[in-house]
Image (cartoon, rainbow, N blue to C red; front, side, top):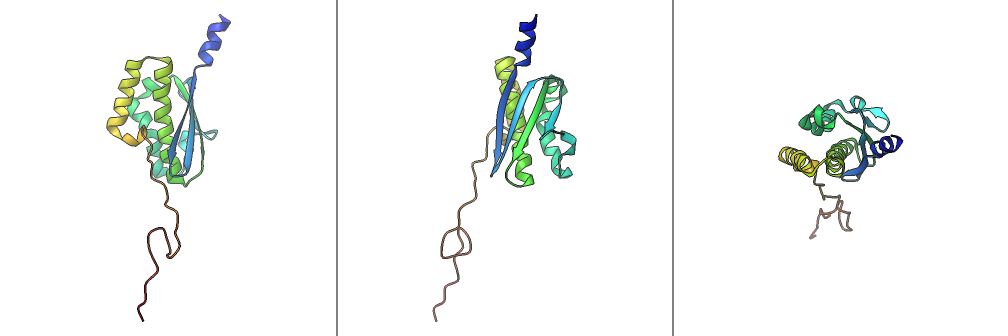
Length: 149
């Protein structure tokens, strides 16, 4: 009896989401549907306008799919917008990975298709990064004005 309880408790996956320099790590494990960001409940995420972005993968999948897992998020780096986009990607990838590892491949494929149809950025990371500044100008591409006289 004790062995089966330990096996279900150990059912967890770790996934990350990235946007620019922000990194979010989602720990998805068997539970009761709690979602926490850096130890705080999800509804305390600021700014309020972008909070819906974090809810998107959860709203798309519905409570019956993520209601039996707990999601713990750790976020660092970047600005608040990049952090929110990293969080939503970590949540989506974490749920997909959990279903692949502990449920079945068919359900995982179904979930992944729902998320991909809505927004590809939920699963696939955006590779764009800030370009480094070069000499002879103010920024990466602009040059100082040239004078002929």
